[in-house]
Image 1: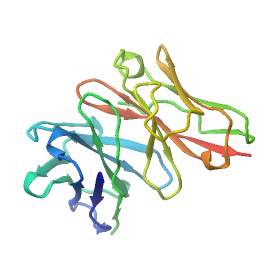
Image 2: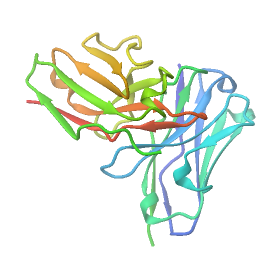
Image 3: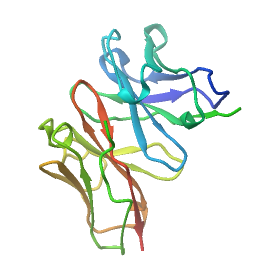
Image 4: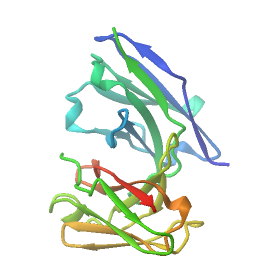
Length: 119
Length: 111
């Protein structure tokens, strides 16, 4: 069964960093893109970035101005998203999702990780 | 990259049809990439893909969901509305250089 399981809820203070994990099972994750999205409370989805199947290439949304990085650990089939210099408006549910190469759609999605930024 | 434009809300009675538009630019929806997808999200749940490559349905998605595209605008039509279709819907488009952009979202209410 194909599944993406994310790490648990995080509470951070402004200026800190957060790292959210996304563990894959049921497929060879080195053959797929892994994307990250977020959704602020009551707001829409926002695409953040992607790591390529090769693991050595990434692409990020310009909105994050270098604050986001996506990495992976092949030995544990886990992809990580780190967001630095956290602000209160980074409070959101963060999702990972899989994309088969050159298909342009995301399936499945992880269950989501709530990150709260508050002083 | 600005969010694609969707109407905030849409509604219809059971059995009726509702169409949601998704307007972008020639750099995304109208860029000829054919990578427009639609996602359904129920409250508190992760999004689920219902349309990919503009008009294709993944296995298990009812055929009352259909997609189309014209110029810089993509559309999702739900025919024969059912109570379980009440949810938020988001379009998403490839936007060059391995980047993607989502729509602003549309809340569908079944009256």
